[in-house]
Length: 398
Image (cartoon, rainbow, N blue to C red):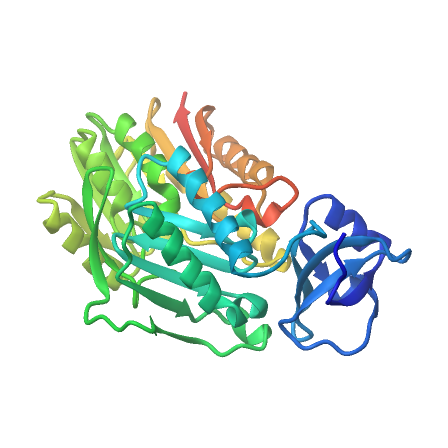
């Protein structure tokens, strides 16, 4: 082990257990003592009460997550080569598991060893979000390494657009902002192709980084089942599920969203692909309540997260149950329900149980056809439950 240049923090047995179990966050209450004063964003060594090395991470006194561990290897040197090597691992992995890197999540935070960092690629543009002060302070090194690794893989990048608007940044002691990193390009839109469908991505004003890449392969599952079906896509957003159903041979497709902006954006995507898809601007709950039975035989639910904290899980689960119940009440026997939850606080078992209860309430039996998560560019890492967030089920009413 090399001579250590970093200040130390000493953690509780609970913190040590969590860290050894693979979770890279050390909370305020898990710190027993600190070796002197530490600048926020600095690297610190984490030790147990016997001074045994446990890892190295970014310290931040503003955050309830006091340390975000970036390595448990005492021989690591945190220079540009370290970050470049880690980026290379992330890119090589995605080259293996994705059909292409034209549009993909290249860095998925802790799952790729970059705490609080998201990097999405849309054609020749990278869109980033940083929620960790230590990463923010080193983003020049990281972004340069990222550009270099992509270039070595034959991928040229024209610009990086930062979407640092999350309130979490303020909790971490950082300002919120969005805009170009260094290079300034005139256009903040790009047309991508996913599953042979064109999408206009507004990476300046669209939700999150501009487009939800994680449902890529789930959309193909919908496409496969849509032939000769009357399809309703609830919470359509960009119209992605609706257009995959259309390409799958659905006899009719209706896209529903409460947001006028979403209906406008999805309609533009439909025109871009020369698809005749009906649109309805309405609240999903209200629309489904008044829906005549058997109007549709395939309904897709992909709502926004109903909960972003443990405190609201109970209400969120009630919402999931009610929404799925309304769908199951409207579907005919033999009909299909595709339903998603994107909150990691609502676990897979919780979510599945609420759908089961919804089925009982609707007086139907459900056959589980498919249970999936996000596309593999959003990998789950065992020991980090926050990386398991998207649940996607397809059921048949029997």
